[in-house]
Structure formats: C-alpha cells, structure tokens
Image (tube, rainbow, N blue to C red; front, side):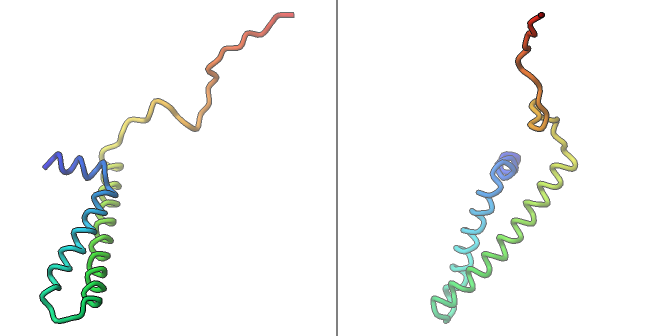
Length: 94
C-alpha cells in the first residue's frame, strides 16, 4: 500500500490519466448492456469519466496541500533567487 501511495505521489498526472482511461472503460462496459445507440453510450461514458477525472484532480490537489502543509521539506541547497559570486576576482593594486 505504501508503494502505491508513493507512486501516486510522484506521478500524479499519470495516475489521473490512468484513472480517466479506466473510468471510460468501466462506464462503457456498464452501459454496453443498454439499448441506446453507440454514440449516446460514448457521450455518457465521456461525461462519467470527466466527473471521475475532476474528482481525482481535486483529491490530488488536496493531497498536495496536505503534503506541503503537514510534511514540509527542507529548503533546497540552491536558491534560484539569490546570486553569489563563485569567482573571487583579485583587484590589482596600483
């Protein structure tokens, strides 16, 4: 379970995309027994998959917020907004 949680934390967009694809497949399988036309089944499946995707995006945003709030990471060693000279120039005496 921890491996799955770590994978989802590292690959959020792939997890959401996989959830979307499985949602389309599951809703198509569920609706296939109905008497509707194929185009109506596709439209309904897309609608259900979009609802599932939105809920996955909201949950991913909640996970990200929780992770940043309650599990703060130490600051990176390199700060991209500060600049320090890496070269020490020698000033020639006159």
